Length: 159
Image (cartoon, rainbow, N blue to C red):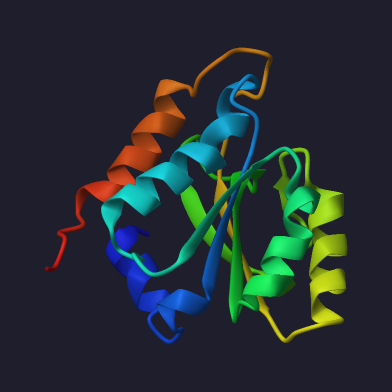
């Protein structure tokens, strides 16, 4: 998967109704991958009318803002142990996340989904970035930073 594939997947949605929620902790190695991915995605300009939220380790702090924005789709972006090689990126539908270990947020994200669905119909997706390490170190491993950079390499901005 690369950014071009990612764009095609979400082209059925109104860009202004897409929220990208970056998760992670920059002081736990590759747990910061979701935040790095979010910044790269925003700077790519691919979804210029979408909403970008850097939630860090507290996605629950953005519940009111997300409800007020009434998105059609909410895409969680985080490091996730799904059995890939470190730095691999995979897109999951909410229904496919049963065996997925999403950094430190796996339990609370499902609760958030259930809560949001009480108010609006929202589609949920997860961008899972396979970590190399989530030890207490600042910065991403070369595997994960390289995997994310590669994801964005093939994209050409269209004016």
